[in-house]
Amino acid sequence: MSFYSIDQTKCKKCFICAEVCPNKLLLKDKETGFPKMRIGAEAACLQCGHCVAACPVDCVQLEPMPNDHFLQVDSSLSISSEQADQFMRTRRSIRSFKSKPVEHDTLQAIVDLTNYAPSASHKQPVQWVMVESPESVREMAEMTIEWMMELRKNNRELAKKYSVAGLIAGWKKGQDLILRGAPHLAISYMDKNKTWHDTDSAIALSYLELAAHSRGVGACFAGFFTYCANDYMPLREKLGLQENHVCCGGHMLGYPKFTYPRIPMRKKLPVNWL
Image (cartoon, rainbow, N blue to C red; front, side, top):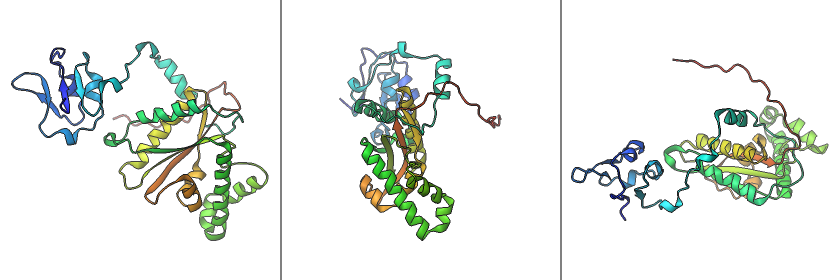
């Protein structure tokens, strides 16, 4: 099979595959009238799968992406706009967690869904460290406090900016204001030389948070931990981060201790319509 091919017995010559191709690599064959890939276009193919996914008669094949690896859309699972609106609005940043751990299969399903997050040129550059052990999460919170203590000694200006004094004092009193006693932690990282790493990782982290929300798992962005993971060598070594890696963000994960029966208000959204 060639890089791009079609089953001519099925093809209706609708050219939807050509229309949805991001880089416009498909054209009409002058002899057969069927769609084909431009000569030498394989290197420019993003392997996004749009041509296969959009074909209404399932006649397109892309060599790097076998058709049996595509998931069939189940229209019975579609939700209304009202359901989607409530789902998005009821997402909360959770900072109080139950001690009950989240099942491994659930954590796996949550992080797997981030693989469907869009990325620049479909590079899929985001990588993950999933900390499943509550003891390890606690250790990483403590390492963040150690980093803050060093900041207070060696970089007072930055320590003041991050308000580390209160965080350290809280830790000494038994309050974990770093990772909030979460049983699990998801850390996204990338090669810092990749373009759009901030945007790609932010989208992936949002997918992770929404995937967690759909399974009744709470999440919250771990900002202080993220600062530490990009500056404190002992923590970087613990996470297995290399010199070229940037920690793009961490999310605490766990079952919420409390429910939220109401949706809080938001400031008026500034929108300029042109």
